[in-house]
Image (cartoon, rainbow, N blue to C red):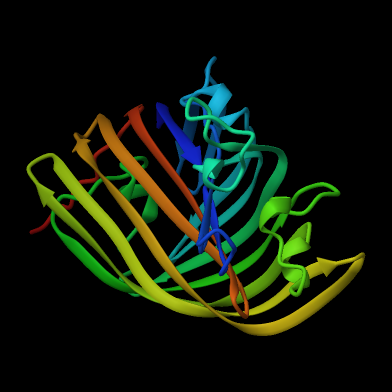
Length: 299
């Protein structure tokens, strides 16, 4: 299969805490760029190269510039699907910071944080109970379904992720609580692993196909924050969900699909909660080459 796609990836996050000024939640937004990609897929092997297009989706004066990095690899083997992702985003803006930052104006109400950087390494494995259930067919690539399909699955997940702000605090100076060292930290990080059970379903109507995966679970997490040059670590549990939605037109020789993927990360330090959402949305158009039909002969 050869294909091309157009879409974007984003990774906004929020930090909840009983701040001053009557604020309890800060929303950090990154400025993303549209990406055009080209790829090939053959049996278990897949390779894709993405190139960012000129310009940003949001105003640079309000959201700054974000430097993205996305690398990924996946393969299928029998009932298993393996997925590895490395991504980072540098450059964020705190939305509507004018309520506590008197240097901002109504025309530019966001606080730009060019050194704020989020990074994530994820290694996931899906085990599908139904051996005929293939992730590549869900995305319309090296196969397609001729009828409805469904299965239970288990997803094992291993993640290392962090949030940093160079040598300055992640939170703005105006909102730092002197009685809580977590609010002045310039580094939050976690390592977690766990199992997420879920359910996958494919609906087929003529050549139209809609599919999705939905799972809920929890992970064991080791979490760290930096305070005055010293790291403080804790162990706990964190919730996780697995959500992927795909759909489009899939004929024997070509496909046009809308593909979405969502991932969530979170760290809770008592009354300070960091939540991040990684997601991507893209439209993929592909051509299946040298396709051969297998026929069954019966007496």
